Length: 148
Image (cartoon, rainbow, N blue to C red; front, top):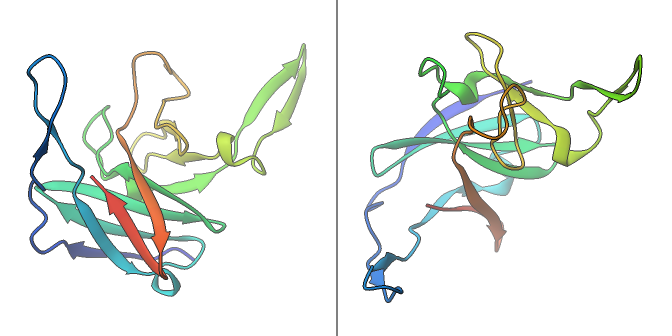
């Protein structure tokens, strides 16, 4: 079962700047408490709006991932898609299903079926040039916390 709810992070603006190199200021990540972990059970996605960006926080079998909720192909709400494994060649004329390996789970775009790896947002079709932004997500004292 997959559920999706929308949350807007109050006060989710820039968190200030930290010193950078080369004269560029580096902004500290914004910390956003998404919800309690039990409110985002395995198999669910929570959509949050942070600073005008829609981000999906996905609980895939107890592993949390966060991706920008926009497919680079045609702007679909990417995180409305389903998470699945996929078949990949392991030898000539031999394919293996990668569904059990967290590195190989993909998010399937609901509009055109493009596949993006949860681990790094890279497209299976064109991993060198097509990707979706990913974000750090952690569990802290029972809260799901997103860093943007």
